[in-house]
Image (cartoon, rainbow, N blue to C red; front, side, top):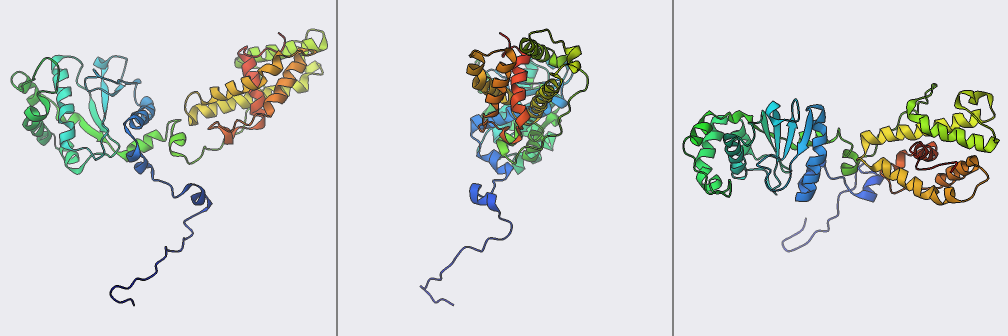
Length: 359
């Protein structure tokens, strides 16, 4: 026991087995929902753009409007065609340092009312508020009670909306606009929770890069037994290299009867290994990540390919040896790159005529 004015030595609790080696390196992970709350306005806008990719399976197309003049439409999910008239849902992105309050959204409701009344665009099927801190309890209740939401807008029109709707002057809530509000379906106004945002974002290629957690494992590489159209130019270049080495014409449909057959089989394995990484990247990392790998590979072998070589086959082998030494450690795909992928990059580049074995 310690008496008045006395101090007792304290120490932090002994770590339990819930902590591991990763915590020593990176600290205790920040929950994903908390990470959303830490985003600044620009990062929030970028996150919403990423999240919108998850809506593509629901809609004909997803479009984002940005900047002044969007008239209250940030992200729209088009239902049947490119035209708003064929139906759409609207996602309004609001960035505040607190859960959304009714006072934050009166002007957004008024924009929809005002612009659809004028015929600037049709009424959306659904209109969702999307915010990093979510929706406050008071606003959430209003969104579930259309009559009270309508009444709240009317009561706050003069103070929050009338002078904010356009440069032409105040927009008074009088007939016929007031009649339009009376008939408007306020049940279209809803919200997307932070949990649903994260769940949707997890289906996009941006999720692992933004939140961590590691990439999934890659599956086995499948090398088609039959020739595929997507390997046409790559195999043509192989035949040119073999022919240059043999000093006679080597044809693809006769390759099994030549000494190059085993090499041809190996180069196809490498090509399709890189193709499998391309497909993996498309589903798991942001667009352009795989293309960056290819550019690194091209840069690493460019000088080697420019040098003099006895034949096209030795040029190709010099390039394959060179690219094998590249680390690729700066790529988000680094942990999923296999050795055959590296050499396969060169064959992909040859497939696009960015590399040529026989100049």
